[in-house]
Amino acid sequence: MSATVPAITYNVDLVRQDFPILAREVRPGVPLVYLDSTATSQKPRQVIEAVTRYYSQSNANIHRGIHTLAEEATAQYELARANIANFLGAQTPRQVIFTRNTTESINLVAQTWGRTNLHRGDVVILTEMEHHSNLVPWQMLATEFDLKLEFITVTPDGLLDLDEYQRLLSLTPKLVAFTHVSNVLGTINPAKDIIKMAHDVGAITMLDAAQSVPHYKVDVQDLDVDFMAFSGHKMCGPTGIGVLYGRKSILESIPPFLGGGDMIKRVKLRSFVPNEIPHKFEAGTPAIGEAIGLSAAVAYLQNISMEAITAHEKEIIHYALERLEEIPGIAVFGRPAAHKCGVASFILQGVHAHDVSQVLDRDGIAVRAGHHCAMPLHEKFQVPATVRASFYLYNKIDEVDRLVDGIYKVKTLFKS
Ligand code: 7TS
Image (cartoon, rainbow, N blue to C red):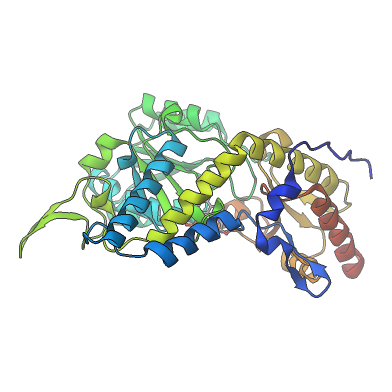
């Protein structure tokens, strides 16, 4: 083994104590090595307790009642919105719309802004590295409105080809929608530049931040982005809660998404007047406890500091890439390491990704195998499936060693 173990100053053992699930054994005597945070992160007790506290102390429906519990629940839900707006650097909490997840946030934009602003023949630029969430909603719209979808290609190193992007911009697109960080390659895209270039030709921008907001300090005003989507469950928060951030003037100008209670100011039998933002986009009873849980997750991450989390993950991924690349017959996707966040997707010669994952699971190592909802990207690299190990604030260097030992076991078993 030639890789050097980095000296980590970040106290990962202390962080791990906050996550009850990390203490469990997958089977008797087999501790959990959780390397699947890109799919969903684990939850610290601070979040679990915030949700429990809400349901045990303040549970009521919001924006409707004038009794004490309803007022408490409303105040906590709106405070959660304000905390999240502050975390993102938004100008006002009214720019934070609660949704179920990234997928719903992107669909909201497609069905509201998209349906009112895109017309026959309009160009929408996407990339070859998108998660299906940022492909299918636009494909659905493209079929209905006869739009032209164009794609920024991915280089063999797993980067976006920005020269190609520059060429595509001459088509004067109406929208550029792209992922901040690839959930397969770990590539961190130069979002600020991509957004500026889009604005220079008058396009609106939509950023899929599902894999960036949990790991980096993301400032919406610095990025100058028009729409941004992310999920609570990938950033230590509960499932069932996501966010759509939007530029205020655009949110005010577009129609509502779903119809029902809360999204209206007045209703007559044959017509309605929509509510102000953000309520205009939040029809029906929202995920109140989950929004409060997400706010606790944001507070938890801020307390550690996003910069410290980013630095920790960088050390782990650099070590992981060094160690993985020592293994004969392995191919890791998406180098160079400098552009990577804590994601390593690979194939092992002669062994199907699902078999790798299954054998690793016997040793309690949770990785993901498949196309990771990025089938076009896998087609591009001509592989049906990859194995993906992903790292977050609670992962340790010795978990990388256990992964590597596990892969050697797979190789022995399959004689690869
Ligand atoms: N965009 C990206 C970049 C993602 O990684 C994901 C989820 C989504 C959108 C959708 O998020 P959701 O919360 O709406 O489902 N990515 C993954 C993954 O890589 N493995 O499982 C889910």
